[in-house]
Length: 443
Ligand SMILES: Cc1cc2nc3c(=O)[nH]c(=O)nc-3n(C[C@H](O)[C@H](O)[C@H](O)COP(=O)(O)OP(=O)(O)OC[C@H]3O[C@@H](n4cnc5c(N)ncnc54)[C@H](O)[C@@H]3O)c2cc1C
Image (cartoon, protein in one colour):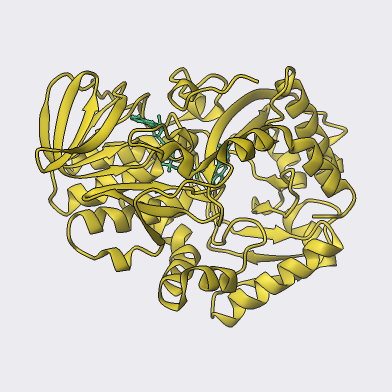
C-alpha cells in the first residue's frame, strides 16, 4: 500500500466535493506568499481551527499571517458533513472527559462542547456568513441494545449537568427523525447543520476584514526557532513571528520533528444524492433534524438546502474503494429510510477527506517549542469544536488568557502516538470489520 504524504493529500481541485459546487460565499482570492514577512502571529492551515485562531487574534489586534498549502477550506473543514454537534465523539461521556482532563479543564471543555454549536451559529449570524445554517437540533439514536445503554448514560449525564437535552422513546423516534429501526434517542436542539465549505470561505472573509492576511498555495516546510524567535519557511521565504500556531490536523507533516506522529490521519468519504423533491424530503427527514448514531461504520443523516441526502463512512483503502463506499452508503440510506427505495435516488457526488484522531479521541494542544504551538485531533467533531477551540487559542495568542484557560490537555513538546504507522495502516483497512460489528449488534 502506498503511503501518501500529508501535503500529497491536499487536493486543491476539491474533486467531487459537493460543497465546493454549491457555496454561496465567494472564493477568497489570496495570493501565494512571495516575500519575507514579520508578523505577530503565523497560523499554518486555513481550516476551521486556523481561520478561527486568525480571526480572533486579528480581532484582538495582532498582525496575523495565515499560510495555507492549498486553498481555504481544502482540508476536512471544506469536506465534512457539516454536523454541528453539542457532544463528544461516539460514546464518550462528559465524566470520561473529566477523568481524562481533571475537574477544571474537563469542566471547561464540557461547557465549551455543550455550548459550541450555539456559539458558532451566533457567530455565523453576527458576520452574516452565507452557509445555509440550519439549527433544528441534533439527535443520537440507538441502533442496538448495546448502544441503547450507552446513549442512556450519555443523556443522563448531560441532563444532570443542566444541559437541555430530551429523551425520545422508541415510538417517538421515527416520527421525529424519519429514520427507521431505532430503539430510542436523545436530542439537543442547539445542534444543526452548515454548508461547511461556505462557512470556511465566510470565516476567511471575516478574518481578512479584521486584518489577517491569508496566503493560499503557500506550503510551510519548516517551523523552528531561529535568532531567538519563531520562524516559518514557506515558498522559499522566511516569515518571522512572535508566535506560530500549526493547525494542520489530518494533513500534518513533519514541520517540526515528529509532528506527523502526533495524530492519526483517518480517511473518510461522503457522498450526496441528487436533490430530492420537498415532498420526499418531508417523508425522510420530516423535521430536518440531523442525527448521528453509534454505528462504527457511520449511521447518520442530514440533507442540504436543496434536498440532497448526505451519507458516508471510512474509506476501505483497497482498489475499488469508491465503489465499495458508494454501495455501503446506498445500503445505509435504504436501511435508515426504507421509504427511499421507491424513489431510488441517484448518488451524484463522492469525495474524501482526512480528519485526525489522538489516543484519547480529544484534541491536544502541544507546546512544540517556545511560542510554537500545534492544535491537532478534532476527530469527527471539528465543525463547532475546532472553531470554538480556535477562538480560545486566538485569544491566548493575543494575551487575553493563559495556557490554563485552553480546555485541552497541554503537551510540552510533541507526543507521538505509539505504533503510529501500524495504527494508521489498520485504520485504512478496518471498515469491513466495523460493518460486521454493527451487523451483529456489537457496537
Ligand atoms: C468526510 C469528513 C466528514 C466529517 N464530518 C464532520 C461532521 O459532520 N461534523 C464534525 O464536527 N466534524 C466532521 N468531520 C471532522 C471535521 O471536518 C474536522 O475535525 C475539522 O474540519 C478539522 O479542522 P482543522 O482546521 O483542524 O483541519 P483542516 O480543515 O483539515 O485544515 C488543515 C489545513 O492545513 C493545511 N495544511 C496542511 N499542511 C500544511 C502546510 N505544511 N502548510 C500550510 N498549510 C498546510 C491543509 O491544506 C488544510 O487546509 C469530518 C471530517 C471528514 C474528513
